[in-house]
Length: 108
Image 1 (cartoon, rainbow, N blue to C red):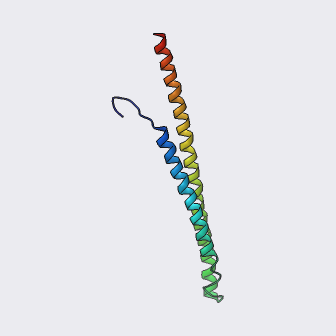
Image 2: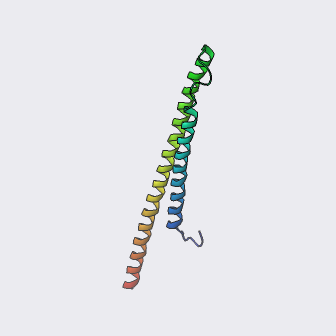
Image 3: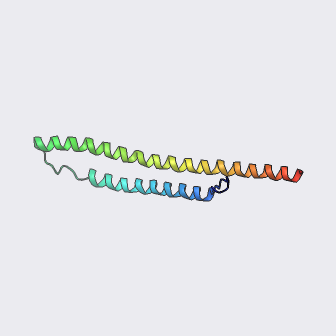
């Protein structure tokens, strides 16, 4: 801000939204790979009592971890959509304000 003037860069905001969306897509891809890797290992801890107990706990923790990371993918997508909407709304308001000021100026 300089001299009470608000400078808005809609293109920069749109660019940030695209970067956030790309990060979400990358996270989704990486999460799919991680899920395949850790879920496809079979039963390496054995079928005895301690191994089975560990396997059950592992599956619960793994499921929660993958679910939590998956929710972050959605959060990033939602944030990107919010930034796009903000950029569009603010750009439209700036254009309307500029048109209004120009109209007033032309009447003077």
